[in-house]
Amino acid sequence: MAQPTGQLLYREVQFFAPWVYLVLTGGLVGTSIASVVTPSHPPGVTLVGVVIPACVALLFLRMRLEIEVRASGLYVRLVPFPWKRIELATYQCHKVVTYRPIAEYG
Image (cartoon, rainbow, N blue to C red; front, side, top):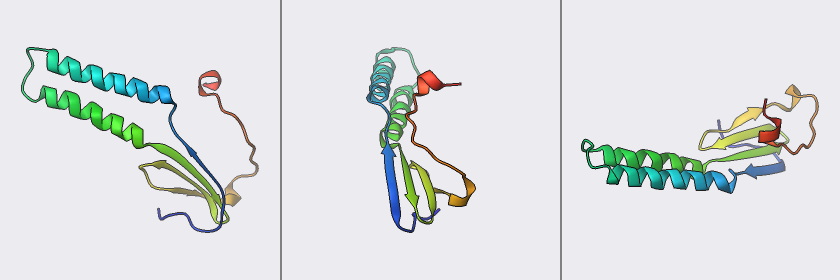
């Protein structure tokens, strides 16, 4: 979908918590060390063991949730994916909440 249009009324950008980045970095370093230290592995395993986790970590580093409320609708995007437009007429009410994912899951 194309970029959002219309007058911008509200914008919010959310990122992952810092501990998520630490876990990804630790996993990347651990995988890299394990693939280099392991003596008996086929050629290319070291490359795959480093490249795939690095690509996943880079994806998560760039990922963010963007929400825009405009006169023409509500726009939501999880970067790097395209925008999704939600018509303002499709929902009946809204409220501000503080979401606690671990406490409120399920």
